[in-house]
Length: 290
Image 1 (cartoon, rainbow, N blue to C red):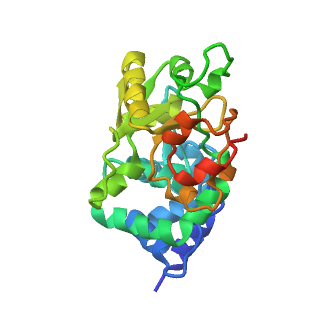
Image 2 (image 1 turned 180 degrees about the vertical axis):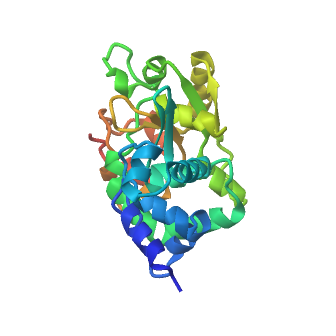
């Protein structure tokens, strides 16, 4: 029997980012039970995406600040909350399922969770990803096939994005790692996702990634490009992360017209070089428009 708090938690997560819709099988509740205790769920529901200090949360809940601080920090260490640490003290906030709960399990992902998430993607989450993909990630060009005389905005250029970041953290792609854990790896580079700013610091704090120099980051980008991966930063002009994605993008590829779900600031029409590197043949017949 499902504890009501886990259904409430699912409904809350469904409001964030790409959502977290219910399924007929209820596999989403199994995932939440795997990650959260009932006490964890209650604390998560007491938070929002706005970062708060433990003292602020404790005051709202009428609980001892030390107890609340310990709970929040434990949850952040298990990837159930986002945490920023600086001279002003620790602050915590609720997170979506993607990017958030799922990605933050990158160093603890086991077969049980990988299989549950795979089932959930098949049953319910892919529709949510299709609906939200246009506001989360956008592809950018790889430059070797683009005339350098044509201006490309700096936020649409992977190398320029890297150059603009004072700290670069690289981590494993959670999508490819999930497939690898269930013995269905694609063989593409695993250490291929970049995190910046406070998100990068959180990854370092939890030992989920490592800091790299600009030169090493560009070398990783070169490896990803040679492997045919698609570079997709978050859609913000100052992105907190940048992914290098492969054919594991099943949500987009299952859509009859996947190009309609991709936001880009560039136009390509029947370029044979691009078609040869396409992630999915279905992209070939479409005119890529922003």
